[in-house]
Length: 414
Image (tube, rainbow, N blue to C red; front, side, top):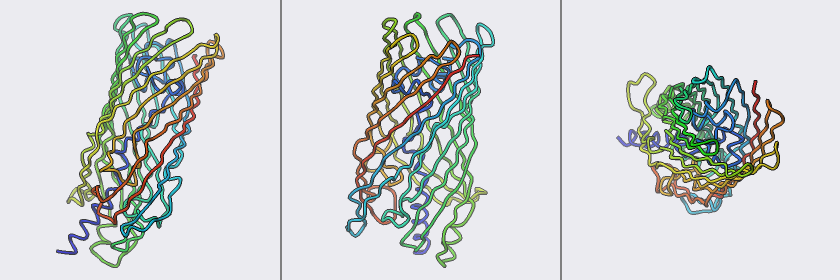
């Protein structure tokens, strides 16, 4: 009985590795133009067709055929300080916990007639990479977390009246994850979990234009329930029961959250514009992780989660320097999905303040360029794994987190 309890406890701790998906690491960086305004007014702006990520109804503002492409280089900085193990001894600080990544995006749209518009978009709305030294004191709670998504969205929009438009799209989302940890109690130096999934969701939006200067919009992206299939592998312990459980094909259900947004955009005059945005991300839909054998024959482990829904607020302004150049500024506030009592080393997340600046250049009637820069200052985050569901050796730490992001995009109108 003691061996069974030890194995079950070890598995519960090991399989917490998939918590990374619930950290609130939603990548808003899907439009270089919108980034310059901290995504304020993103559901109403529709300044180019990359804004359809936030509101698909914005397709109706783009005549003819248009292509927007771009990418954002996201450079996080996270340092774990005052790291202490279960024995209370101070461990070395861990630098560069969260690694840099590039988030690409593209959108192509086409006007079918005066009423109907279609489009197709590709982007990476969720993802992160955290990595610690293999021998760090918190290895039982996570070493590497590498999660990537790719989403492709065919969409359409319909102009109900001259002022009111609606739209819908189908999200085709691919998710891939690679997660590693250790278990010092059992003498397991390396445990790796790899898996992927392809599942569907949907997108809805509406846009109302009071006049040429003022418009409001709402957007909704559904949650996507992923059934991730993959395998778990671990270094041998010479205990047959444990080796058998730690080396097998598995499946687990993960949910990427639904998102609701609403925004407003207003041109004050020929030069000045102002905008605002509110977004609710429904992280609480990620309630638990059920790890089962690949054939579904038995439950390996169940881990309950404690994430909360989060709010994002942003305000912004744009100023036309001349007929070709536009300056953008923005300020945002983003809540963390993880409270102190449930923070793990895989998720050193906290509330954040966004400061953004951008520049747009209209080269000619067909071609335009946009760049956006973001500096995100995160609140200090404390960690105490004794308060979480993790059953590995206790570790405490304090995190200093910040993020810089540089985006580039271009639009070509055919």
